[in-house]
Image (cartoon, rainbow, N blue to C red):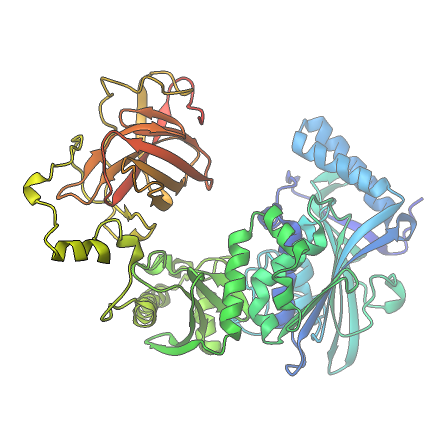
Length: 638
């Protein structure tokens, strides 16, 4: 029996008869990795509310188990879910039916699983629950954010949706304790997002419902009305995801991985610290280095497919703590000062990170002409880029997208400010490139050992023989026969040592005509059929090796495909006056067709092919590829 004491779950009236479904842009943004999203979004919001700047903000992530009888208004939640399920079944909406069946199952369990995120050393979210006040923005506003300054962590107002994405019933509770001139206050409110429906009273209701005071849809402000597990005892804010979803990855390590990837700078600087599962994992300036090697964290990173992001965070953290780092400050007109911190060391690759407010944002300024992908003849380095002050931080914030992982001046609505931002960040991008070149460019010295060139130049022993008069008669040399294909403009070169070279991007030539003498043993692969189209693609992370110096026809090719589907890969000799195609006679990967190999690729998958050319060649080569759109069957890997 439902007792009406003025406190409960109430859905907004739907006087216009609008049809509203489950879909919510904010929730869908975080649906794929909700545990990681909750860690990131709550982390940045809590950092903005820091109270004592001499101490770090502390966040705790704990799973609570509450008896269903102790869950507020449980009967109203069950009743509404049953109504919405019946409505979805009537309409035949499979997605909604699946959601409400799972919600019904979760709410009928004897215990309710809840994820609580609580922050400490924060100011809380100030009320009252009125437009323009922070608590109203947290609990009732859509697409809005009210923060002390634009340099705060988030300003799009969708981060709070992460807690709902983690819930099997799209429901979150918010509880805060804050202080103003009149003393300390508490506020507590819940919000559910279902579908539009007809309530038990026969009235049409909207998808959005609030738990709290039914009159006016207001939060509870009397501690006696708030369940103990929801009530804050210290200043700060707690967010609760109700009926937390099941997860294939250990949520404790998934959250730890997300916190390390996003907040390594704030953690290292003692601005933030975290505790997970009642202290099972503690993330602070003393433990962070060990956690980058922790087996549980590494396993979660692999399951999340986040190894690259995790490795970038580890390297950038190392840059922040390295006392050998080189520091630079750039003065950018219209922007201000930007700090650079660089470490030069082997096995760092080319690692770049833009950090704002202690949180990692992105590794590039692609929208300003600098993707920062190619650094030929540069030493390995790690580089941290940060706005020097709050004014500069405001500019970076204006350019951030809602997911906080990209920068673009097109997000600024004011034309004059947008033009200023575009110009200033283009200058910044160029200055960063100049600084990298200054600090990391490899300059030739009096003597440099280049072992990778031993295949192309004589050794000391051979030179001694030449001095004694044993050099080869050049008239005895025979030219290497190369099968001539259609000449083409130069593309990116993959040298024998795996180093990329810069070159202008051009359209690859069409596929060559079919070979009149195809490979007699092609292995399993596609049948001959008419090609509908061929789309040029740029292979990623190209490398090639000479596995056997005694056999100059063999070459090991390594590359990553940027697309799914059937791809034709050809090889050109670039050590000649003009690029000529090297005809592939056999390959351990895919099938050989017209002197190229045709491979079925998966986007992001690293592939290796041992190929043999039909002639000897030891010089540098270039790979090019086109994605094939076929009729009939697709090729299979050999």
